[in-house]
Figure 1 (cartoon, rainbow, N blue to C red):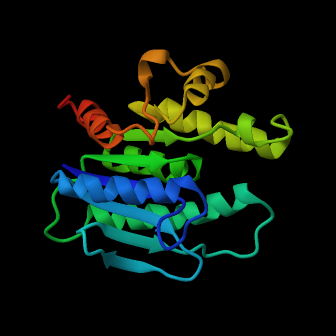
Figure 2: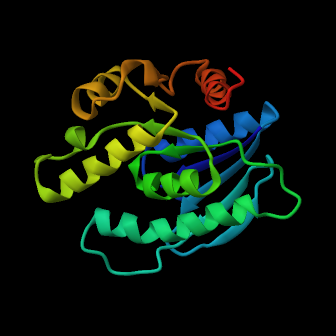
Figure 3: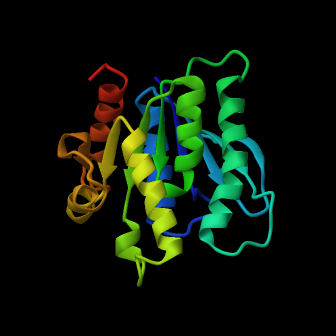
Length: 206
């Protein structure tokens, strides 16, 4: 199995829990024999690096600066993420990519473009929703972000929720069918094994 993980953060760039979780997930997947490539953002570093554990990391920078808000930043960097996905797809002597795991909403636009261009199934992993983060979830900025959250959930084969609250509100806010959601908190002892099981389910091996 070959998996692309799209994430807004990855060591050495750590903003919150996502970067630490993706680092642990990628490392454990490699131990399980999965080919893992991480595509992530970095302010000043770009290019491809293979880590000691065998995980390949493609880092991209945002080609446009400054930005009005997080939404304009995300939509601009999406073009670079899409390019990195295409580079991974067409990498010489590489096996076929089986799926994309997009961590949080920042990579959704790029993931959906890859799904439509290359026929790759998407797993959408979410830690929180805009309604949880925003003081005014009905302002135009938040509505834009929420539309991307909805797009990720709609286009994904399976949605991974990191908490009971997220799982419940995916249905309450975005009308995601409950049978499409899997709750896998990253502090559970078997979360990597269960995530691998969801990957297999998404590509028809589960």
